[in-house]
Structure formats: structure tokens, C-alpha cells
Length: 497
Image (tube, rainbow, N blue to C red; front, side, top):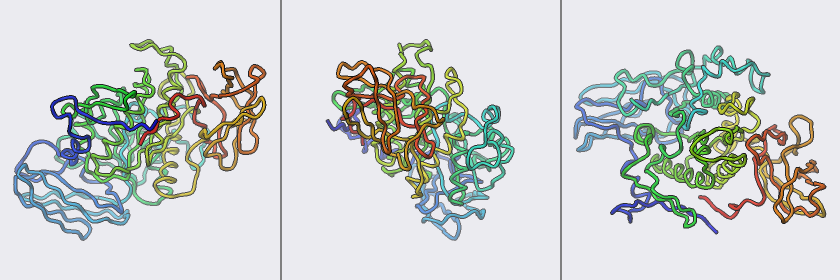
């Protein structure tokens, strides 16, 4: 059955379609009208503008006031509308690490300094995305990862690269213009200490590989579920009828304060690290529908339905041992992983697996955010920037039974499959038609895995890493961990788009 989520309002305007509802809010204007020309916080000193794409510059002025914008030889004029909103679009520019100045003029003049042109990404989610470089500096020392001259734990000490710029969106003030236009900073010192570690390490690798400036915008909120980030309040979820219902007159808590004010600042794409709160809510398939909605809504807000959206699959953790409003078992997390994996069907998405990162399954914030940033960067370098490189661990493709064995085949198995520690592959299970699973012996045979179990004479199905505590050793030659799966998924025929 092909699944296509529908987005409707349950009020008198229920017949208005999803796309039409969002278009009036696409520009994400800051509220209020003033006599002086202003720009939103995200447009300021030290910012990075997106290369090779039309770049939106916008703000407010007195109604019908003439506004001009000058930058790198371009001079654009416009007139504020009756509400005082104005917008100009700069022609695409090549990457440049040479600082430039922008002038925005009306009855007053705004001069913005030290502006670069390169790659810009928006990073959002909850506490694992918010996890700061200050926290990263307190992680226990680690062996030196590939590509690092110094321990990533000590990254702040060596972070003096003027080509990496950071912007931290604050919920209580992002909607208001910054009087000094100082929202952006070079990624160093105190500004970097308060910034997302995963986002910084992503920027570090993108800058190193592409040799262009990188700007990172972060607006993650610890403890947040996905619902507050949506363009409307969910009034019903009915997967059985393939429908999500939204009340767009009542957006999610963070959407008007942390998402809309950033649009239409020109981006290359989005990074998303969220899900722990929704796993505690015992979400499974419904999370895939929510995430599909968020991706569509954000892409629509920015006016590009194909903006890359790369995300992190949450890490192993003892969810079932934590008391809350929902009864969770040891399979609740694997079912959530399954929902996250389903979202890979949506065009221009990618997922970083983190089953290998926790050092303590009672800690929901695993260290090693440099690995998260690097894996997201590898996805972007491969899928967005066209570099030939591994960006995913083995991902289940199909299975076939041969005698008393089940053979498993995988995507992203280039160069072969292996154990990360030289020990036998673990966390594989087999079941016959009775559906009872037993531990399986797993062997790498060429391009596939051979499973067998003395308890299962006629294997039909397999599952891998299907428990919340799973930290398996199954990787590809690039060392990237395999995606958890079950061959008997009840969602195998669901299609997201």
C-alpha cells in the first residue's frame, strides 16, 4: 500500500490545502513595523551567505519606504509594502573567504561587516544537537580519530579558523532585530563554547574538504519533542487512513519563534538530531509521519521542496528502565529506529547511525559528538556535494533462505562487510514461521551475511540490533555501523515521500 500523508485543518477552512496554507508565511517576517530600516537577527556582521544560489535579504521599514541593498558589486532597490515588509534577492555568488561589507539603506543606513560567502546549514533538534562544545571539552580523552591532528575533546583550544562562522538562535529574542547586528560569531572562544558540538564538527569537516567558508545556524531546544517544531498543531494522526490532521492557525511552540524568523535566509540544507523525547512518548510509526510533515513544512517555508535534510538516528539507551507516562519495553527503541529509517524514503534525506557511540547506556547524551558531526558531513559531502565516499553503514536490502541458513544482503557494503573489533558478529537473531527469535551465528561470506541457529531449522526471518541496549560490531569497510532492522517489519510496504 502506498502511503501519502495528507495535511488538513479541522476547522471551517478544512478544504484549504497544506501548501496553500504555508505560502503566506514563507518569508517569516519579524513582527511589528518601525520607521527605521531593520534586518532580522540572522542578517548581521560576520555572517556567511550561501554560495551559488539566489540570496534573500529582507527586513522592515516604514510603509512604502524605498530600501536599497549593496553587496559585492550588486545594488538592489525595492519599496517596503503597506505593512512595512521588504525583500531583495541577490544574484548567486561564488564562495569567498575575503571579508565584505553590506549596506542596507533607507531613511537610515545599516552597515554590516566581515561577511563571507560559502555553505550555510541550519541545525535543529533537542539536547543532543544542543550539546555544547563546553560539554565536549569535558569528555574523557579519546584515541585520535582519522582526520584529526589533535584530540577533538580539545577542539576549542585549536579552533581559530575565521572561515567557520556560527549563529545561535535564542527563542526569547530571535524574532527581534539585534540593535548591534552581532548575532554571528567566528567559531572560537566563548561563542564556540556555547555552540552545538555536532554542528561545529560538521562545519569543520565541510570546510576542510570543500575549502570554502561555512556558516552554521543552531536553534535546538533540550527536551523538545518534534511537535513544537511543526507548522501546525497535530489534531489527529490516522495512519490507517494515511492522514495527518493539523490546525495551522495554532503552530507548534517553537515554529513561530525559532523557525519562521530564520526564513528565507538562504541555506544549503538542514541537520536534525531529535527523537529521544518522542521515543519516551512511545512513538513508532507515527514519528515517521511527523518527521515527513516537518521536512515538507520546513522545505515549503524556505521555498525549496528538495532542500537536503540529514538527521541522526538516536543512540542506544535504557528507555525501558526510565519511569514516565508511557510503558516502554526493550523493543520500544528498535521500533523507533525503524520509524527513523523509514524516513530515508523521502527524497534528499540521509541518516547517521550512532549505535557505537554510547559509553554508558544510562546516559542519554553519548559523547563523541565529533563522530556525529563527521558522519553528517560525510552524508552531505556524498549526497549534496557529489564526492565519492562512504556515508552509511550496511543497510538491509533483502534476504533469502538456503537450506537451514538465511542469507542477508545489504546496501552500502562496498569493499566488504566486517566486525569492528575482530570478534564474531553479534546481535543477529533468527526465527522460523512461528515468529520465535533465537540468537544466530553470523558469518561474513563475500558480499553477504550467513545466519544459522541450531534452534531454527527452517529460518524465515531475521532481526539485527533489535533491543535498546544493542551496540553491535557489524560495520562496513569504512567502519560505519549497520542500520538496525527486522525482515518481518509490518511497515515494509509503507512509502513516504
